[in-house]
Image (cartoon, rainbow, N blue to C red; front, side, top):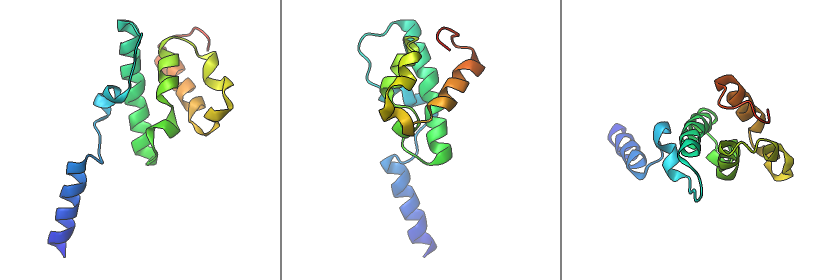
Length: 107
């Protein structure tokens, strides 16, 4: 029985159920962002991945890719306007942005 459990854990790890938070930015598809915005997206994606793993929920339930990109472009007002975003952890994301002092524009 122990052997079966060990094999199942190995299979789950190989499939990629766990993900390194520092590499989370690689999953985000961006088109027109500059170097500074890419750096911000990398930091935001890292935070989002940690939150998703902490609460065991999908990344987009924390903050969508689109909203990470908006935040990197300092379009903070757009984050809370869309009612589809009500299930996301946008208030926590906004607090994170203030705490890290990435940008004060629009907050």
